[in-house]
Image (tube, rainbow, N blue to C red; front, side, top):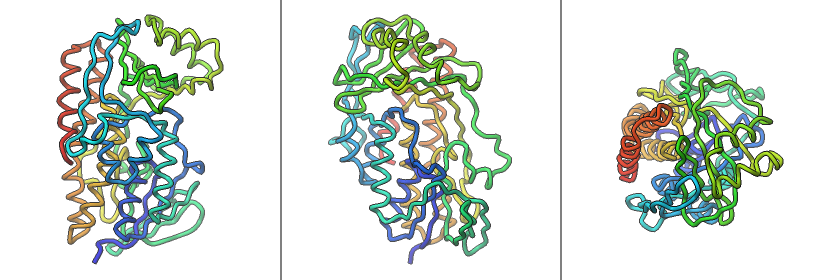
Length: 377
């Protein structure tokens, strides 16, 4: 007999959709609500590490991700003018030798793939809706939704992101994510190389990761004092200033920034924040997933990956345990160390970049973390 028969997932991001697909596959009735009526994330590219590709294969969407995205098995390390100084192979995840070392895709494309798979799995999706109140007892959770409807569930999963409203309900004293002192810039540019490319300037590092056969997304992290809002009209000028020292392809992109409309490159800026919450990640029949408990910066390209892995572990434990409490404790116990590795390593890498610290330590942190994440979950 299943531990739960009816589950509500609050939040339609990659973690929530992965959980919906996996639990529906077990024969569980799944409702998923997403407050965004368009079900559309920010329109930037996303890097998908080898372990994340392995996870997406278990979810069942890997073929479409590789068909519509871009992938690579090596990184070209270039100087500021685009001359290649080294090419570093990227190993596949353990148990996934047939998959590339990494891939990239537009977030909107990934959301479309995952959304279709969620509905095809049988989950009931409601957009533009969230919860108003959650009231639980030993038998389940009564949910009042923002559209006035009500329903009863055996389990509620809060997968509603870094500023999770479900987390505020469960953990009202948690202060929320902490700003890291960096901001992330992204833009869409033509794909010029087969591999991922890192351009090393004297004070800035820029990268280009393929997201399709013809496009890459360019990414730059910069040092910032606060999370103050930056008007999109200022983004081209500010990004051009960050890229001032580069020549080659990056320099050509910079020179065109101020001469083209903003939509040509689909620029995106966001301040970086993160947190890691100690277990347990549940109270009674309400449990948190993904960014709600472990939000990370993009230094290891694993934020989406640990959300997917969290969904895999949660679904596995719900499918094999004899008590709901045991399943939810085991979920956090199995997933905590990998999530913490990503969050803390990424935070330290950001500190080194912000402070102009040791490149050797930065590289070693990345290597150790990637080797650990390649191992089976």
